[in-house]
Image 1 (tube, protein in one colour):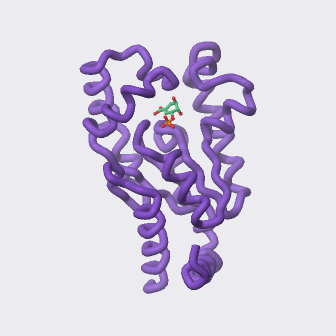
Image 2 (cartoon, protein in one colour; image 1 turned 135 degrees about the vertical axis):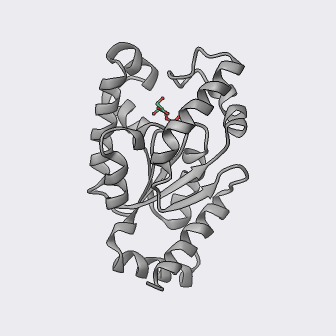
Length: 193
Ligand code: S3P
């Protein structure tokens, strides 16, 4: 980060303490992890991927947790991992696609940080998910057409939660630089209020 930008950013973080945590939310395949890592490094924040935190705590993959303990159990672990982030500062958190949907997770993230929704349409998500289906238990067994219908249906249900994020960004051609600039611009706009 350039020094002047860095100072502006820190200034806004200080006056709005909630902005010390940035939560990237959105459907599977929207790019939360890949752009999140680069955003964190530009902001000189740490980066956390909730799924990886759960996997490390449980010493099991998300797929194994779903298969052996069930989705409800996974959602409780996810909630626990999310709550641990509320004590952290200067962190970009990549959440799971389902995180905002369960419990009061969305309200909590909005209360504790800046939520950024990486928005993508079903066709874009489909093309990104096909090569990476196996590591995602909810979609691992679906054929291409089933997967497309599943994404469409789930997006309709999930969008009302995702849309509660303060900042919405089109994920299709998203690069870390675009995300970074949008976050910084959002911070600057806050100063007008
Ligand atoms: C899920 C998304 C996954 C992971 C789990 C469930 C979901 O995370 O948490 O497989 O319900 O959408 P990613 O969005 O990082 O793939």
